[in-house]
Image 1: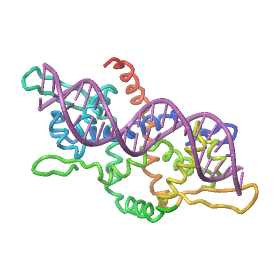
Image 2: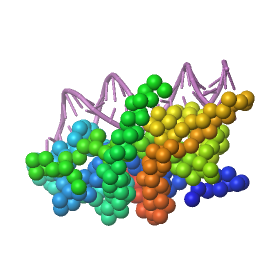
Image 3: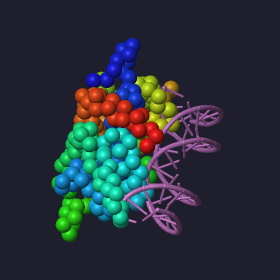
Image 4: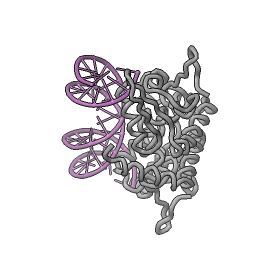
Length: 128
Length: 128
DNA sequence: CTGCATCCATAACGATACTG
DNA sequence: CAGTATCGTTATGGATGCAG
């Protein structure tokens, strides 16, 4: 799987897998995609989304939404009414990227034991 | 899949999936695990590892290694010789967590088209 | 060779207050 | 309701030099 150069293995930070991982490196983006993926009807309003994402600030919500919109993963629908109404939904490309995210969510749910073991080791080695 | 509270969906930042994702949020940790996972024999020295991870600084290498060691994913073997010799290898728990990481690497390699599409959209929407 | 310490720049994040 | 702006804190990461 890894690239071999002069008989030595090489791993690159700008490889495809790493480009994918960068999506995960920002705290809320995956949760936004995950939430939209599971939203009944696939569309939801700003406020609803914020209330569903426990602990997210308005700033990070909007910032995350702009981010995924810029990347072409989410589409924004603005209704010209008062009070304002805006709906968000995954694009086709967004649903493609929901796939690995759902894989991770699945794995996480099925491997709580491993996650707990890691946390336990973590606390045990505080003074390392 | 999501939790339902009062008929509304709720997504928590401290859920199992998110705890897994936190492993991914630090730039080099996944690459270190990925590299060790594919290393012939499963053990490798500090310098070898650094040379294989393109662009990593010494500081981040050591920091990442201490991180995964603290989490119980990697074991450190110190040889009492001069010049110093240290080897790293994945623990059993580490090999468990290599699984989702390899899944992501696999997905990334198989979906270069989607990644390129995202990048293209990204650049097109610069002035958004 | 391995590891640590230091300095510094930037990015991520949260809280709050304000506009239409 | 949706979105913006500002401030301050913390985390992240790179460069460099030193020590065993």
